[in-house]
Length: 257
Image (cartoon, rainbow, N blue to C red; front, side, top):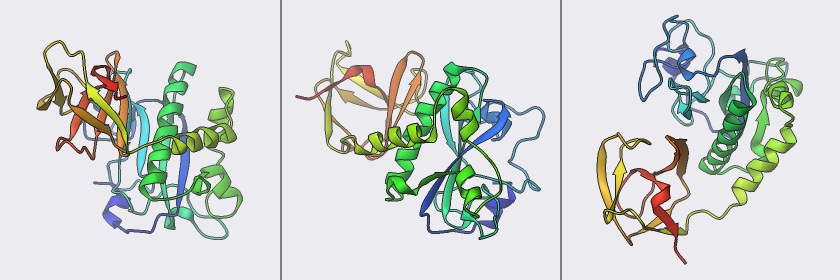
C-alpha cells in the first residue's frame, strides 16, 4: 500500500494477462513484498517494493515463502487496478488493459517446476476471473515486440533454461481451462475422528474455523486454490456451498461416485 502504483489507484478494464519473470535470481517473495504476513519473512535490506519511489508494481508475484519450501501466489494490487508492469512502447502501453504477475526466478530445476505449475494454475484462474480466452494471455517480451511495452525478453529465457517454451505454457493453461470445474463432488472420508477441520490457513497448526463431518459432501468449486505444504495438498474453497471458507487437507476427501 506504500507503492506509488497502489496510491495512484486507477481502475481499468482488464482484457489481457501478462506473464513476467524477474530476471534477478532470488526466489523469495520477501525480497519484493512487505510487510511480513502469512510467512513472507522480513526483508532486512529494505529494498522491497512496498515503498514510495518505486516506479513499478504488478498485480501478483509467485515464489517462495520464508520457509524456502512453500510456493505461494501473493496478490499485491486489487483486481482491476492498473499495474505498472510492462512500461511503454511506441504504440502505447498494455498497462492500461492488463493484469500482470511476476514469476520469481530461482536457482534450481526443482524450484522451476514448482513455480511453473503455480503460474499455469494462476493464469487459468485469472482468465476465468476476468472471463477471458486463452488468447488474452501474453508475455512481457511479446508486448514489447508489438509496441505496447518496454523491450524486455521475460519470461522466455527463464522458460528456455529448463527446456520449456511459451507454447508449452499456453498449452498447459489451455488444458487447465478445459478441465471440468464447478460441479466436482467429494465427500469427507477416513478422518479417523469422524470430522475434518476447516482451518484458517494451509497448515495443520493454523486456527480451526469450522468442521466437516464424515460423509459430508463438498463441492470443488471453480475458485479454488491448491497448495502443497507440509507433505499434503490443501484446498482453499472460496465459494463453498457448505457455508464455510477456509483450508482443508485434501487427503481426507474422496471423489463422490
